[in-house]
Amino acid sequence: MTETGRIVCISGGSAGIGAGLVAGFLEAGDRVYTFGRDAEKLARLADRWPEPVASGRLKTLVGDVTDAEFRARLIAMIASESGRLDVLVNNAGVILASGDLEESVEAWRATLEINLIAPFALIQSGADLLERSPAPVVINLSSACADHPFATCTSTSYSASKAGLDMLTRRLALALAPRGIRVNGVAPGVVASEMWGGAMDLMVETVRRRHVLKQEAVTPEDVAAAVLFLASSGARLVTGAILNVDAGYRLG
Image 1 (spheres, rainbow, N blue to C red):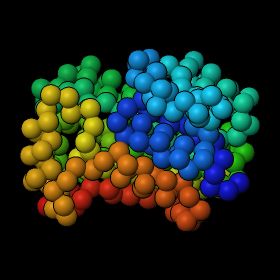
Image 2 (cartoon, rainbow, N blue to C red; image 1 turned 135 degrees about the vertical axis):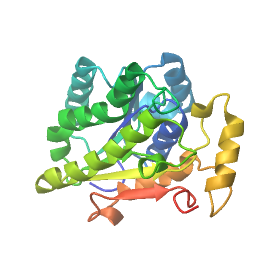
Image 3 (cartoon, one colour; image 1 turned 180 degrees about the horizontal axis):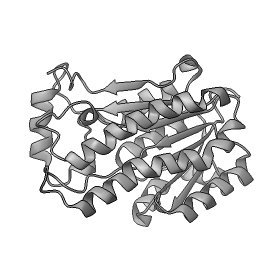
């Protein structure tokens, strides 16, 4: 296997960081399966890539990463069509609440289900298929908010879910090493994406306060470059690592 023609699965690939990841792997010549819950966003993604869609290099599926039946169908489809899985990127994530004790238990459960439990479940479902690859790797999308209770990280449930994801990355890197499967993470700072919605002023202020290297938001392309590196042969001995792409967010 060269670094083209890899079989890649990306959760939450319809917009934002996910769409940047899809673009990066398609431009590298890979075959990409991606999925999300919003059919309209997935249709817009497919419209941007008519040739890969027509050739079968891009498969978009409507599905929920927290749905065990959907995960099983997804892995079965990849196995049937491609025979192996080279790269699994756990990108799907949510911020559902803001605050500390004000956050509801229901918001906590939903956040942990999507941001932490689903990545574990997808790795668990796909491990045998990953093992068929000559150079398998899992990459989990974390956050600068996993490291420290920064005042600019306003959701306790989100921060806790990403801290848990970092430990999951390290634990599974150790557990899956004997099977030749690398597991790493990428932790962005403030990313310019639609997740900010109507809070763009907050995004700009957070970038100004925390991005000490350059007062610029991280782009989906910046994140994709880090993920592509970790998926490459240049990172063949890298496992259990969390790569910060945050313009110095943690330093300020």
